[in-house]
Length: 201
Image 1 (tube, rainbow, N blue to C red):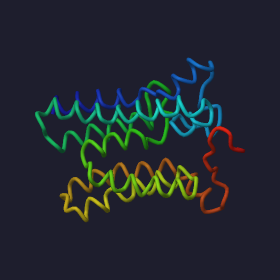
Image 2 (cartoon, helix red, strand yellow; image 1 turned 120 degrees about the vertical axis):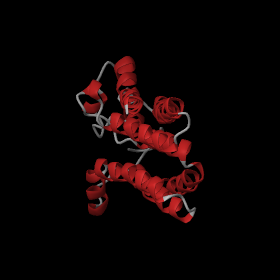
Image 3 (tube, rainbow, N blue to C red; image 1 turned 120 degrees about the horizontal axis):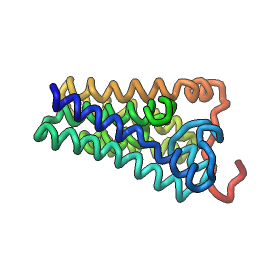
Image 4 (cartoon, rainbow, N blue to C red; image 1 turned 135 degrees about the vertical axis):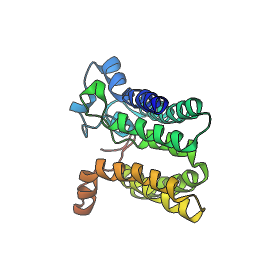
């Protein structure tokens, strides 16, 4: 139990490192949570800092998920359950970071890192579907929800164990919870579409 506790704590603290917050502090001297959507994540970094920093933030946030799974793997000598649980801890850290008074992001990039490390095939298929939704609708939030909802569905189709699907559903539930306002905005037609450099916002 001690090893489990230490692994989960380290993964949570790793997840609590907010690269979007750090980048906006370094590059603009501001708190990203006071701008754009108010979210400390890659999509809001795109709005506040632009494409390059947003891409770097996404990759770094995803790597937090990969690293947390690696911590679980190393500490448990390959226990797949512990690997996923450590990944969940990293997503919790990203969403509710202790370093930022528990006001963080929505955990999608970190989820991608965790899910790709543990359930690569299901994540790849769901990721392609999510990218298509974003490309067609320009709603990143919708693509994020498609990604997290479809991963456990594809896992079920691919005959993953009920326990693994259940652990992934915890991540899915967190994503839905963090996108509660986005879901309301999508229903009412007020959700922001993503815009790129050179386009009208």
